[in-house]
Length: 348
Image 1 (cartoon, rainbow, N blue to C red):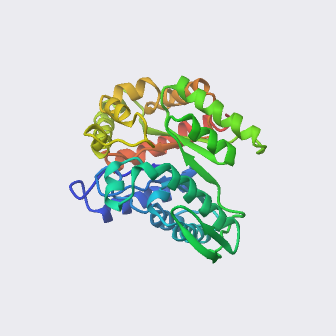
Image 2 (cartoon, rainbow, N blue to C red):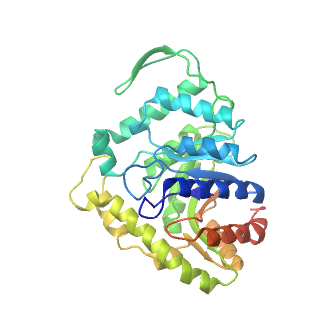
Image 3 (cartoon, helix red, strand yellow):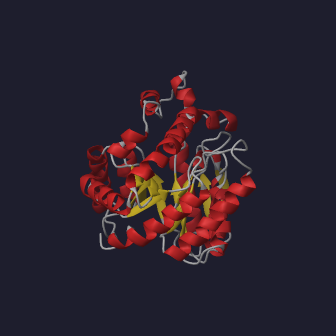
């Protein structure tokens, strides 16, 4: 289960939003879902209700017993690694060893501007930040002298419950180098279900790098999907179309600086990508299989077809409570998905 809040006070108080999300966490735990995942973003309707995913996941830990607790993802560019490592250790302890940590570079210009961080330092900050957090979790008495952070011998507390550290994930969009690096490091990959053929190529790069680095197995891939499951597929598409279109509009608004002059050597081509994203809509997402909207049979077939077309993935993260979807509809969708879709996918 993925939560990506695209709401603000115009839609309802944060207290009500998170109370409902935590009710869904409890339900998802009961229904046998694998994980709960939430983002880190700031200041705007697109993601702004979730400036710290670890705070929400600590609350989710108290409303669940089995769910893995996944940051999807934390942003090293805006977090000191000493603070982030301590928070991760604390979440892992509170949850009894259920934390999984996804890292991302961040990509919204307005966030960089407000934190006073140069977008041209994005990749370097990400590489240094993730490495230092890993060292602090896996080792004691860590000394670091880096470009952005320096500190004397330090042991991060609390020590992680999972050793040497909780499972790590890297969020990647379209750059081969991001997929390759995640494979080399032995981390899972969080990706978007773009055109299957394009994703297949990047996943081949990821899995090849994983094996060449000598890691056991073939890696872990998580894909994020919007999901609305109803007995009648046509009704699901009728009810899901506008909320998904609204989500896409808010994403384009959140990244609007890319279309009004923002540029960075660390984000080559993003202005074209965001401009293209502004043209996206429900029908295009549905056509390429990234909007799981329909009946249980239709959604099952969509997942099986996408799984085959992209070369396979291990985890589907479904965003079921998005935009202005009514909580009652989201609940029934989640229950139907668990009852009639999940059992048919267990042997993949």
